[in-house]
Every structure is written in structure tokens, then in C-alpha cells.
Image 1 (tube, rainbow, N blue to C red):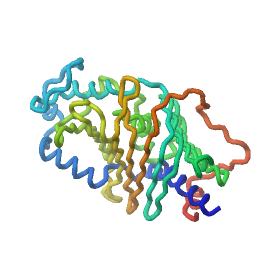
Image 2: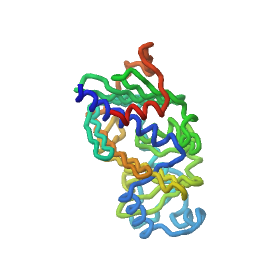
Image 3: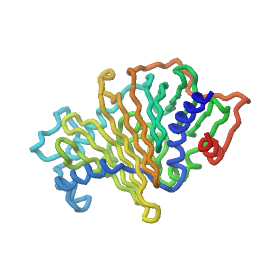
Image 4: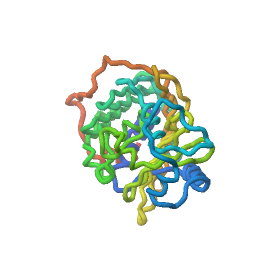
Length: 320
């Protein structure tokens, strides 16, 4: 029974971090090593100029073509490169896989197996298993709400994105989370990133073969690293600057790319939250790339489950 409770703690650690890290006006951004990498790239190739000046420095904007990305010695053509990045987005409507899920928070560490099921523009569902066959927790995101289910204690938390201060204030919603899971650029507050919006993004030479893609909005800074040759996103970063509470950070690294139909997809996702004096790390290892379609996209709960608020589920979590 103690082992089951411990496994439940690990599952809830994973689920709650997504909500609790975004349920206050604290923000998210990049961990120290990532900040150093971006800083190095800035020192080498990014000047403190205005957006217009930066655009002129990186080259003449041209429409995307089938031409390979320019050689390192050639100027980086911003819009052309960004369109090549978006051309690498997945065409699949479904992505499914068994996953190995590791979570680390403070001195607590645990590795669980689980299932990830995603349907484009509809749902992201992560099922976390105990003993490999008992579902301990479920995390479900839809365009309308976020749902956390504690199977062991028969309780759940269901909230809209507007009920989460950070989501509401920053424009981060289901579609931003989808882009993070699907290894894509995103436009905060919008369902899709349009070609017309690409003019608002910067793309600048970084360290080695990296290109730094950036978008700034008030206290929020969005950064991506992309491979210049492959035009593939390698890292996504969101930074919230708060002079009173300090900086809060989310970093999402992608690696081990495998071909999925005509596109490639990262089989390893490493996620790190930096919050006030707290650090939470996740790692998702995909077992395969599937496209299972025969599953219900909405979870229905029986009357045995009790809805709780965020504070109550946090109190229970901390007491385990």
C-alpha cells in the first residue's frame, strides 16, 4: 500500500506541476544552462538593436521555397527560415505512444510508465500508471479545460484556462501546450501560427549551427532554438520577468528525432520548471510513434469521484 501511495505521489507530482506552476501570476522560463546558451548566442550573433534593425541585419525577407537552408556563411533570411520551420510541423492528426515518464521534485524522484494520446486541436491526454497496469493519475487538456484525476483517492480537479491566472494573463492556452507537446512554434493566444504573423518573430544566428527564434510580449519572453540546416525546433522556452517575485521559467528540450511518416518527431522530451525556490524536472521517453484513433477523446467520471479545488488537492498531495 505504501508503494502504491508513493507511485501516486509521483503521478500527482507530474500532473500538479503543469497546473500549479501556471495557477499564479508567477511565470515560466529557461533554466540557467539554457540562459547561458542563449547568452552565448547573443554575444556571438545578436546585437542590442531595434526589431527593424535586427530584421535588416539578418537579410532580405523572401517567401519560402524548396531551396535548402542557406549555408552558415550566408546571411540568415528570417521569414524564409521561419517558413521552413513551420513546414516541418507534423501533418498527423493523431499521435499516440507508450511513454516512460520520470519526475524529480526536490529529493523526490520516480519513474513511471504511461500512455500519451493526442488529437490535433482537440485533446492531450497523459495517463500515468502504477505497476505498469494500474492507472494512478490522468492529465487531460482540451481547448476548454484542464482536468487532473487522482484515481487512487477518487478525486479530480477541473478548471478552465481563465481560472488559472498565468494562463489568462499571458495568453497561454491549450494551443500553446499543444505546440510544446508537438514540437512546434506557437503564437500566444492564437489557435494557429499564420504566415503573416512570422514578421513579428526574430530569427538570429546563435551558437554553432543554432538559430535563435524569439518573440517578446510585455513581461513574457518566448525563445526557441532551431537547427539551421534541418529547420527543426530543438528547444522551447518561456520566461516571465517579475521584479518583485523574480523570474519564473519553463524550458522544453527535444532530442532523439525519428521519422514519423514524412516528418520527424522528437522521442525524448525534457521539461524543467523553475519556480520560486523550487525546481521540477520531467522527462518523457516515447516508445514508438503511433496514430491510434479508436479512443474516447473526453474522460467521463462516475459519481464516485469528488471534485476538489486546487488548494485541497495540493494539501492532500503535500501530506502524502
